[in-house]
Length: 218
Ligand SMILES: C[S@@+](CC[C@H](N)C(=O)[O-])C[C@H]1O[C@@H](n2cnc3c(N)ncnc32)[C@H](O)[C@@H]1O
Figure (cartoon, rainbow, N blue to C red):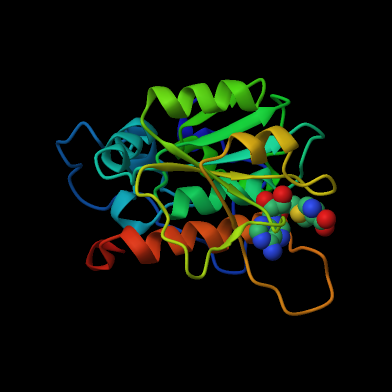
């Protein structure tokens, strides 16, 4: 199915239409443009510089400047935060998102951003850590477990996989044992933990603050 026909279940539908209508004037002579979008308009959840571009052209453009941090989340019980994690990883141009455990995940919270993100599946933590070793990535497990280092003061490795646990059990013991570094997010209230999708956003943004060139942000 063509990208423009494939409005997903959570593509934005609001009071004000997002995006642009049909292209006005002579069509651009550039392979990155999608004739169907030029003809009918582009209402996708993408930033304006990518309006009317084919999906493959957008992915290739982001690929050229993705950051070297990956994001992984354990999915042994169908965690419902994965869509949120994928969307945030997309916003921060993460290299890839890794689902560890069950292959299926609920795409609702992703807001169709998964189309522009590289997704990998690993049956277990051992497979993820093997991928990390092969690609020279440090495994940074994220959970507020005893001995974890505060992410507020820890330096995150530039080439890394940020690994999150799921609601309920949190990070698996195997993930905690094999990680190169375990970091926690400081809390001050009564709850034992914060939502995994929120935790993922905080830690991804910590990586951005430490390593990204902010002059290149949109
Ligand atoms: C909701 S928590 C899991 C439940 C938690 N173990 C508990 O006892 O309440 C799900 C995941 O969110 C992340 N998380 C939540 N709060 C966190 C915190 N304060 N510091 C670091 N990670 C946190 C971790 O990755 C964790 O595995």
